[in-house]
Figure 1 (cartoon, rainbow, N blue to C red):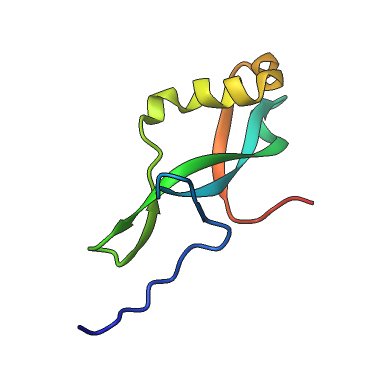
Figure 2: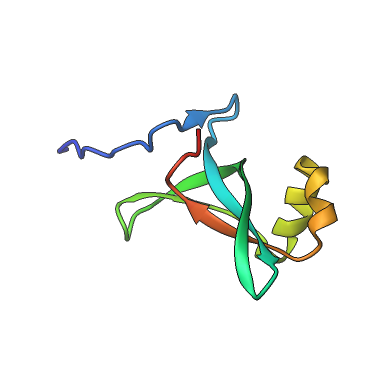
Length: 95
């Protein structure tokens, strides 16, 4: 059987049950003044990822998108004061 080279996402890791996980970074944006948006901060959350044979790469399994806001507020309770905020997935890390 021929070996296939599968690229594991940078920074991904396996837990003790064999599930691969990776950090996903989000920019948190909030409405500001005259209708523009303001960058508040950058957060990262851990999500399981699975190999998609059709795409031939690992993809993040974010589960229920409707619950994502609750997950964010549970991990970052200080964001609750902004009320309506928007999450933008990013690959650029703010330092």
